[in-house]
Image 1 (cartoon, rainbow, N blue to C red):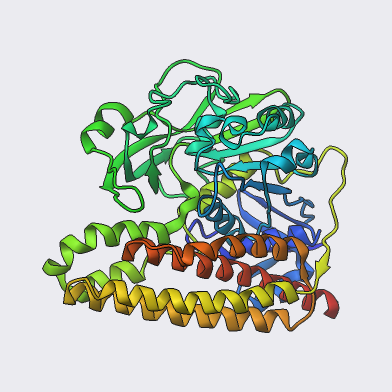
Image 2: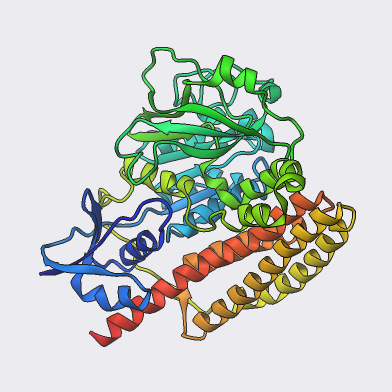
Length: 469
């Protein structure tokens, strides 16, 4: 059998990985390994349509299934926390379903392989945070029966030991539990020690950190897969509570940033920082402090390039999430051997929502311009350039989605996931906030739609290639 090899170009070139995962979604032979990504040789034409190059060889790629992923989107988490994970998964070519506490109590987790617990306020336990009995027990039972769990920040607290309602899957108690705000917010570097988790990643991964759990280096059953390496910058974005470099050096440096453990037949992985937040949130952090400091010193050109060259759908944090899915064994064939067939639906509901969202985005850009008027002349000029880029990108992404949807039906999981998260984004576009925070919330729908558009383009290339076979 002829196979087609695609080079794994690492964290900052994600389209080959998106293509690989869409091949998996279509149940085409596709797998990854030490030498890169491998798909059925007959898919070389589809790869070429997406600008991907590779080489033909003889072999037999394994057929691997994409995991069925639920993101917790109940009141205890809320928007935008779960939207960051939505963006990261879509950027990897993976679909998801938002799920809440009532659905979990009703048994909905039986349809999924992985539950993602974003940051937010699972810190208190979900039964108590949502005033609904049975959520915590249902999640514990899901993992114990063989399900997988991934959590960041508040999701990491929730998987730990030490407070009522926590899962106790990780046999570690954070140094700060109820008083978790005692740490702060920052951009921090972490180093990954596990070879599976670190594949395709640089030696240091720079991630946003917002009051995540701080663990000691105690002996425990849970395995540390990575540690905090260095302090990069403080953050005042959204929460004006910067992490002090002295606290980092004293209590966090070289302590676990990523932990994993088994719970019954299931497996758990947690991140203290936020790999899912992507670089567009880091851009907001930089605008809030770094740019304000250095704009008068280095001028428009250097600061504009600083903003322009942050990554969008391809970044180290997202590759870390993909590697974590591999580490959890989520691309292996399920025990019953069944892979659910892709269902497709009309994109009509999505296109209608995009029309509503377009009006909200136009109004949000107007508010951004008004907020920028209170800035210095130099800062106003810099922000206006960023606004113009985003406005143009939004129109380009909208046009791209409409074009791809004109080709016919769309993956139902992609449509449902996008509709759910974009509907949740609408109120945030009207919420009063500072310019930098409004900018992040305005860019979020652009990033979500851009990642969704990349999936649609992959799918349509695969459909065309399949029809031509």
